[in-house]
Image 1 (cartoon, rainbow, N blue to C red):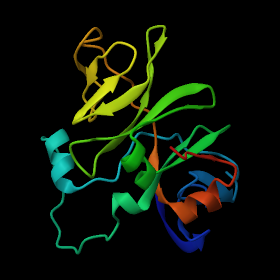
Image 2 (image 1 turned 90 degrees about the horizontal axis):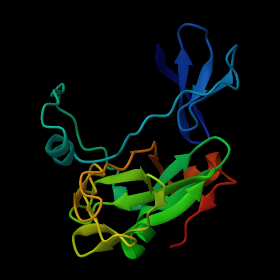
Image 3 (image 1 turned 180 degrees about the vertical axis):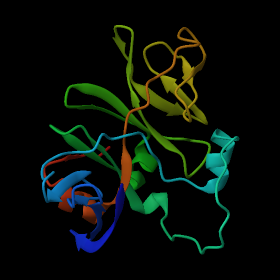
Length: 195
């Protein structure tokens, strides 16, 4: 079980491991002090989004309704980080907004970092391989389309809605948001996508 350790490392929270006393870096998911130093947590797909968008995508979600003020985090001021250990990429949301999906290769994995063209607060990282074909994803109006087959994809879940690959589903890969300055601090060797 992890709890807030109370100190910052690189302007980001650290967590304390109740079981071993190790201290973990929140953005890296890596133990930085204690018996588990160097161990990494398994990354899971996550996203920063609004409650309304989350409920639209996950209507059966139950959550504690506690009064709170807004976080002040706005997706447009963030980057999306894809970190596969051996290699990472940083994708500024402002550039994704201007240029569309980032079709990239990180640690040999063909990925697409996609902002949903229908909303300002939904994004995903998809594996671009379907069978033996690597797709190039693009936005056309409000649609996410692959250039190879013209298939239209749902940007919220990676399901092919119509076209030659109808019914296929792109795998969702782990990615997370970070402020650009913090991304450069924690992943100084990451590729920064320029559009």
